[in-house]
Amino acid sequence: MSSSPIGPSGGYRKMLSFGFVCLVYHATTRFCKRVYPWKEDPLGKTSGQMIGAARSARQNIVEASSRAGTSKETELRLLDVAKASLEELLGDYEAFLIDNDQMVWSEHDERWQAVTTLKLNEFTATEDMLHAYSRYLIEMRKRFAPWLEHADPFAAANAIIAVIKRAENLLFRQMEKTTAVFGEEGGFRERMAKLRIEQREALQAAKSNEPPPPQCPACGKPMILRKAKTGPNVGKPFWGCSGYPACKAVQEVEK
Image (cartoon, rainbow, N blue to C red; front, side, top):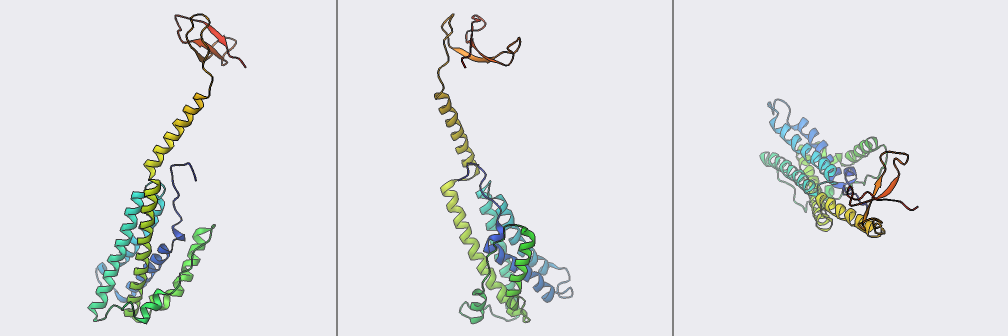
């Protein structure tokens, strides 16, 4: 385990929750362009708020991951914001369906089950991350597109709701895990305090293993290790009496 007070951070591209949220974001941008054209949404409020909520979920996961190393509290807060943004977006899709006299699919509906059993591959690349992840996400989007970009907007809205629920469940489990890690290891402040204590104890242990300083041959007081500042021995260590300037006795350092 690293002794650094800064814990691990980043790595959000390897989280399934982030992958599902990315699918939701890109599906929402396409949904809004198709369902809310300018004439239907002249001020852009509906599409703007829906895309904004999807983006908020995505970006808050990114920021939570980047802050994980120094503040578990901030990480949890941002993950909670991401989850709340997803819930807000779900409400928009729910309202869209009800406004058009369409029901949200039952969890027992075969269409709901078809969406919830679609597999999202794990992202495993370790280099050229931006390129690799864009390729990965495009492949995953195409896998889910028959549902998330369904020709029937009501089917698409229902499918997106199903994926939102999957992302929310994963985020909740991630928050539970983060809380457990915080309880076991503490946060940045606790790790900083632990590091200071360990360094102080190591310094004290090192000092306790050092031999005591010699006594002054003139007055008997303990001597202090000093360095010559002038003269032919400049920079070299020597023992000087702790009673200086009353006692100017010196002694060479034994090699």
